[in-house]
Image 1 (tube, rainbow, N blue to C red):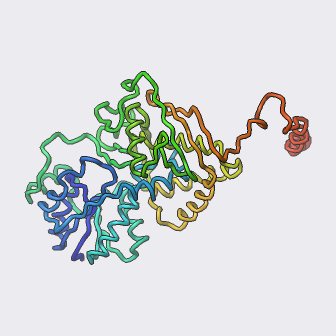
Image 2 (image 1 turned 90 degrees about the horizontal axis):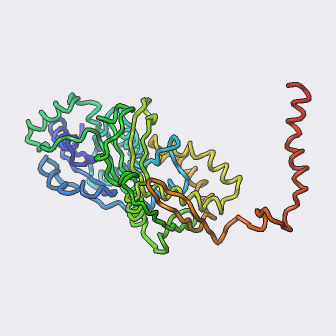
Image 3 (image 1 turned 30 degrees about the vertical axis):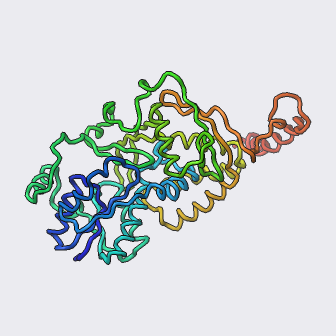
Length: 397
């Protein structure tokens, strides 16, 4: 049983019903928590809505700077990308939400936390792994795994029974999640992987066809792998992400449509808008190309899939992710410099890079005459590397 529960609250139909369901089922006090991670107008009217549906209070906290600085940027320093496409926008938000839920539960003397994630998705795992890592004895209530409200019709009937306002506007034929890094769309009409998303679905970006006919250039400066300025202007972590989203969005950058493998075992079709993150990744890789040692880069690259999988699966606070982060940050100590990106009709094209600590030496790399590289040395280098191949052929194996 639970006497006081902290609920991760969005104000949508599901979590509005969960407030009342928790009260009716457990006779408990419900405290709502909404994290402002950059979802803009989605937070409007949230406080009154929570109180009207039975919550005793609601925390609405602006976590945008912490989110960008302590979650998004470390993940980007690690070069994380899941299954070659997904920049982990929803995945990286969940550990911060889980952390604050636990902190609020401790401050309020609550004995349980709750969330509106379904029993089919990844978010239930991410929220709960974060919570258990930080509060091993916390009680977690996941209504979707235990209640009998298993359809939209039953949810609406429950809402009407308890006088919970149900939006009269036409329901979106998909679900979405938004923060500073991206907005995701899944479910509903998108469950057919052959169906092209309608243009009116997109929020952060124009279509590449509707983007300007003139390219736009942007310069992004990095210090030890962390972005610090755009076009020479220093910005906060959240401010930098907001600016890149604006630039990428108006140039149609950052749309991804993929079928991914969920941690719980099923495949899922997701459509993502990540305009700022797409630009940031291209710029980061450009500066790395000048400043990272070859073997360090290749070793780092071999660990990226594992790191991305840990983030996707919800193991942000696991010791292996934290250990990997130490290594990833070590690789970034020399990643200081500036990348110039051309934005044009859905593309983020690297057109320049420079660094005060560049490992690129024009005198060595030139195809013209030089005095620092003896081309005859390559003969022995190649023969030594070919030795095992020649022996294999001679032995006929």
